[in-house]
Image (cartoon, rainbow, N blue to C red; front, side, top):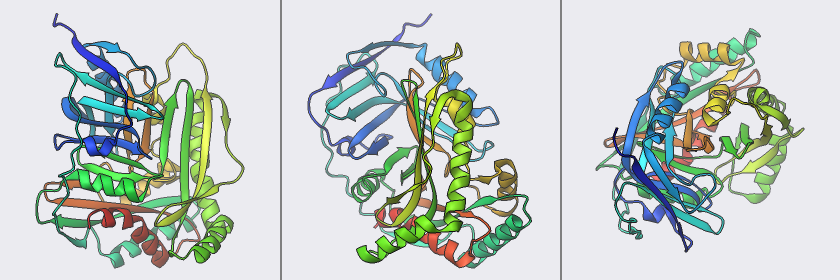
Length: 406
């Protein structure tokens, strides 16, 4: 039997600029407002796919945990060994699991470092010389704008048949760089410009999502649902009026209600109680405003341990990225979208050794492959949708990534 691999977590005294610590060696991140986790180096990694990919991911993670001897001076979610995950939207595509060699975490006044192996505690230093000199050329993605609007029109006609209430259609654009793409300046710019989002990076998928699919911590679960969007103008007075119109929009309220209901129904079997606010609030981001609802619940105590993997299997895909009813919506997406989403719109984030974690929906993001990055956006199509307005909304949703590349 092989000796167990030491995993050590110790407390760090100072407040850390987490994204400034990342070296170029396979950086991963999950940051919001300066708090969260970053990591680098790869202790182990694998891919999973298929209908049972969440179970496969849990099994692989538990197999890895059995090889560890954990010594932790800090306790709480995100301490000890951590798995970073980026699941595909479609079960047939590959999902990525990464256990970093080093993880640095920060929450409130507490910061810590975890490392795997018998080496001494890694020395932390700020990396300030990773500004990018890449120049990007943008081009149409899988489809032209006109072709995508035709697909939106087809989705609207499907909704009109009453077999489906909402279908989410995605589109992409391609940005090509003059040199190898460094993820770190992209992350820092996203974090600076969108501090209320969760800035993430896992295996070349980088973005800043406003949508928290799942936070599980000590038996309490939270999911932030976003559906219903309006672009900002930059004029405060006009944007306040737009926010008020969004909050009254029957089309957007209908789309939002479907998304909230799908999340509440997915969590209900696992919870002794859930709290679903009667009406959404308007979430203001730098580029758009969303209707938002925070659904919360207390896990029921059972002999069968409920972890993040259990909840992910039930939650994904939500109506926010698929539609309602989701089985019918998924089939329509498969038939008319014509786009390989990869890990866009899939769960992304981290899970710790107790099964707690934070995972968002991979939105406002791009997938890096060598010197190219595919940027994605999606729109919820309901009976009141208009193809030109949906195109405008999708362009607004691409602004964060376009801006981060400049």
